[in-house]
Image: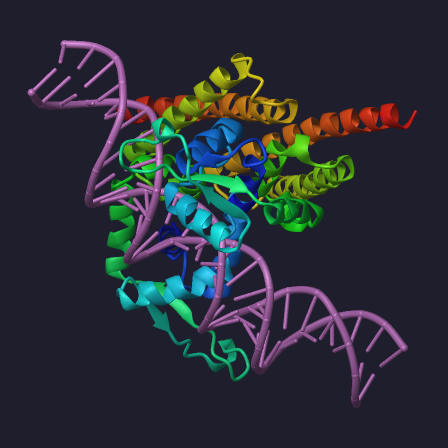
Length: 181
Length: 181
DNA sequence: CAACCAGTATATCGGCCCGATACATCCACG
DNA sequence: CGTGGATGTATCGGGCCGATATACTGGTTG
């Protein structure tokens, strides 16, 4: 997930770790955090895999004290890998965590894949919604007042998300028609 | 988290692993999963710590083929530990994951701690809401249409949750007044 | 009645990610 | 001058997930 996010972000510009994290927070807002404890190891993993390279800034004034900031740049392999991850969008992509991150890079995502992700997510949320409806309609003494409230909140939020997804999908379809004619 | 959940569930009755997971799903519905890959190691950890004990069912008919189901029972230390975890409810408790699990055991939670959790959660969600409001009012070109939509969904859902929490809190206060007079 | 499959049940392993912690620098404010 | 807050890189222990393996039970179907 973070691997995908880093690769996506570095399409915008080369960045160092701290910057990547700030930008990610800006994009994801409430939906995902990603700590430095994950970020730096992942950066090294990507570097080892040749998907990103460390660029030492030539300009000495761009440096920061004696301690060098490590600026990472996407390689051709990195771009390929990002496209590949997008193309392989599947069930895990419909997960809460994953979906938000993918949406943040939608402007860089081919229209057909955008549609696949949106529809996959909708299916996933609809399933969850049905589960919650069933659980709420079943009058079981095994579920107390508080849990029922929790399920009610969950049901409302899945219903809301399905409506939101329907709007996004309709918008995509309108754009598709525009492209076609 | 799972440790807390297991301890809470075993207050109802002794259970084996598979049963614990089913019951947890029933309670948490959409909010949390917990896989067997976490469950069984956690069970062993709790057992090592003396918080639960393995009960071999004496009744042979309750057995299941030649393969024994391991039924776990809460010890006095386990009950203590659960109460202790509740008493220590703090900032991590306001997290998405944690809050849902805690709510599932609210009927077993002292009224003052229930209130602390509800109010802590509300603060947390309000903070997120403010962050999203700020991000949405700032007309930045660094945020594209899709990301803005994501933030809009997030804002709506935090607003909705705050209202939901306010209702729960009001209900708690009403009950409190009832107890007092 | 045998073959098959879905559900019940326990368990391990690799890997992602978080929170805590540590350490160092820069800059604005008092 | 010094102190706190933002910038910046890094490690470590531990929680949790998904994939995978193994095996028994009960019901359906050819």
